[in-house]
Structure formats: structure tokens, C-alpha cells
Image 1 (cartoon, rainbow, N blue to C red):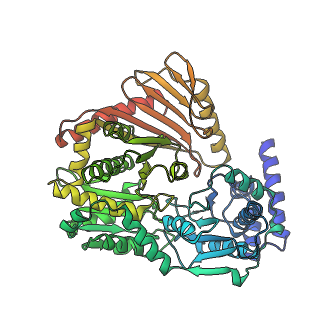
Image 2 (image 1 turned 120 degrees about the vertical axis):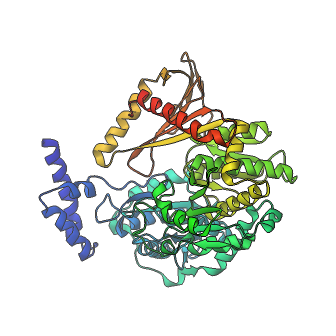
Image 3 (image 1 turned 60 degrees about the vertical axis):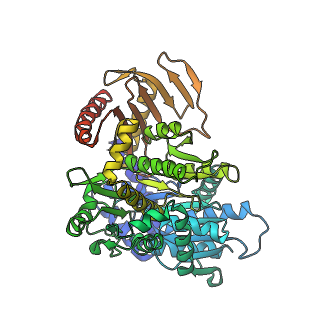
Length: 585
């Protein structure tokens, strides 16, 4: 009780600053006053118990007034710190010589935040190329490289619920910032007080961009196409697409047409731009519920597949028909698996694969991709979760080796190197090419997936999100990771653990505890366990949401598509055993 009273006192003192300073507008001050006067102090504490942390991925949080919320003042301080870092990184440059790209998605307040960002950069003498309206995340990444900008900012909370917004910081390579820039920017942001922020826009240094960049991006996406002939043979492939109220609504149908597809149908209710996402519980392609309207229209039109993008169009969802003609959602691991398989197999068949070409996957993504790459003599690199790490692998090989694709289990893939973030428009075009190729072989996408399983073994993946909101939740997540690290499991679901990887300590342990070093670019708070029966478990706290994530992969075999459903049932039972072993049941 004493600690709670002290916390309320501390939060009230912070709130008083917001209420009394002329730097905050009246609407914000009234909202803060309401929190202070409310006998229930929950909202006050959650809004002011800490400052929303500018981390290596930027900012993400619930919108509203307060130090722990996404609002124009927190966005302003982040941008001032980012501008300070840019000016230090490029000393002696004249006004307007340096430039940044600023974009945003469809979320509530996204345009306000983007305009605030552009204004602050301009006030610091940095030219801001501001997109005239909402645009996909991958187009922001593309534009940074295309315009020769030194950095970029994208206002988006990706697939998070409607209450959230976010701020992603990019560097000159079009990728989200990595060392040393991430830590340098964080240091500068932490030095900034609200009175330091230059909010006054310099009109001469803010330039709107739009249509020409859309065209250039669309032309770049065409470079991910592998087999134009197979598309021509199946240009009438029946495609249903949903923009999920977001940024893909215009560019995805245009890209599909530029590849040669002609039968493109859209889900009209979800083509409406709306940051409240009225047709879904959550605009997340990982949630089956979000695809309901797409599947309904797909059934009506007899579609071959249903595809969707999340609000900022970096992630994609794929739905196809199973061997009974029912709709089945292809999960993120299966999506990455099919892309990797097709890219390798068809580049080999068309004579496009070179010995130095390479693929990338994240450490929590299915190990089946590694088996496909190994069997076909293609280099596969493992990296940390987050596309900035895939971009890092592309960057260190630029000019020496050719990147041909990479992805992660969370419904993100990048099939070419003109962008340095996950790219749903390009990936949707490629999955439609894959569907056309499968049709050429007398198969559906589902048949193709089962063919991969019969050739390389069956793999079943499940991600468990344990949500722990607020300060108490953050403490619980920290304690869970400390416990797992201190007490390494010796067996999981009755199978002996033969390898433990601790990416925070950068060490790997065998079954008897002998340690060897892990070769990774830096430490990360991730643990992995591998068992004798092929089970793989990864655990890590989310870097953008109040949750701890468990990634479980179990293995098996199938002889044909008819074995898929029984194999899934058996695997689900095995996953339940794994959950019980880890105390997650």
C-alpha cells in the first residue's frame, strides 16, 4: 500500500507538469486533469508511471496523453532526438542538404504524427519528403533508398489493436536502425525535454511525394517475379484481396495487374480506410477472424485463393482450399516455407540460381527451410527476429552475394532486395505466381504445401502469446525469463534436451552442459531448446507489445495430402505436452 501511494504521488507530480505548462494544449491538459481527479488512479498510473521508451525499434504504445502514451509531444521529443543524431552524424551540412522520408499508415492520429515529424525535421534544417497520404511500410523503405535520404520515419503500429500507434526509425539503407545508430539515437532522444522540441514547420523544407514514387515502387516489385510465362498461362487466376482498412488498398491491385494477373476481386468493406478497423476484432493476419469476410467473398466468387495485407501492408495472409475444398489459412511458417521452396526450385529450373545466392530466416522460424536449402545446396542464414536483421544480412553481402528471399514466422517475407523491410505487396504477387505455377502442375497451394511436407518431412508450429500488460506484467515477464535461464529444462514433453541456445549470454550448451560460443552480431534476450525428437522451443519477450512469446515446433511425417489433418491432430497433442512441460497449460 505504501509503494502504491508513492507511485500515485510520483505520477501525480508528472501530471501536474503537463497541466501547468503552456507547452501542452488545453485539450491534453483537461484529459490529464480528469485522470488526476478520478478516484480510480489506474489510468493515471498507466499513463505516467514511466516514459514511453524509445527502443531499438522506435516507439509503440497506446495513444493518449501522458509520458507513457503515444501523443504528439512524445513523438515530438523522439523526432527532435533523431534530428539531433542525424546532424551529429553528418556535421557541417547546409540547410536542406540532408533529407528524410516520412510516411504513415491508416491509424487514428497517424497523419497528425507524420506531419509533426516532418515539421520538426524541417525546423532543424533537414528536408522532409512527406508522403501525401497513407502508404505501405515497404514503400517508405524503398523511397529512402530511391531518394538518397539519410533516414526515415514511418508512423505505424503495424497489426496492433486500434488503440495503438507507433514510430519506426529507418537509416539510409532503408532498414530499421541497428547498432551503432539505434543506441546513438536512443541516447539523443533521452536527452530531449519538451522545451527543446522545435515544432515550428519550415514550409520550404517539407516536400509532398506520392504518385511518382508509387510507380517506381510498383516497377521495383516486378523484379521479384520469377516466371512471367506461368502467370500468362493463368492470368485469370481468381484472386480475392483485402486491404484490412489500410495502406495496401491501391498499390496491391496495381502490382498484381502489373505482374499480369487480371481477375482481381477486392473485399469492399475492408477497402475503406478506417483506423478503428470496424470489420475485425484486430487487424492482424495471424488471427483467423480477420479473414472471415475475405473467405465469404472467396466462396461466393469461387476464388482460387484469398490474400490480405495488414494495415501498413508489410505482413500478408493467405487462404487457400484444402483437399476437401474447404478454406484453410496458411500460417506464417508455412508461408515462409512455400516462398523458400518455390524460389529455390524454380530458380534452379529456370537457370536463375547462382552458387552465391542466399536465403535468410529468423531463428524462431521453421527449421524445415534449413533442410530445403541444404538439400538444394543453397546458403541459408539465421538471424534474430525482426526484418532489420534480415536487412543486415543483405547489407553485409551487398556486391558479393545475391539475396533471393527471406522471412519470418509472423507472416512477413521479402522476395527481392530493393526494399529492406518485409513487403506484403511483393509477397502477395509472388504467392499468386506460386498459385499459378501449382495450377500448371495440377495442384492447389494446399497440394503444394503437402508435397513439400512429403518431400522434406512434416512440421507443425504454434506460437503462444502470454500477455502481461502494465508495469506488473513487465516484471512478471522479466521474472519468467530469469527463471528459464537459471533452470534450463533437461527434457521437454518426455524428450531429452540436446541443445540449449542462450542468445543473451551468446552461449550454446549440449546435453551435458558443455558450452560453446554463439556467432551472432550482438546479444538478445532469447532462449531456445532442441530435443532428441526434433522439437524446438523458442522463448522471447516481445519488443513491441506487453507479452512473452513461445514458439513451438514439432516434427512428423506424411505420405500424402490425406495424412495432413491426422498429422496436425497428432502434432497438436504433442504441442499440448510441450506446453504442460513448460508450465503454460
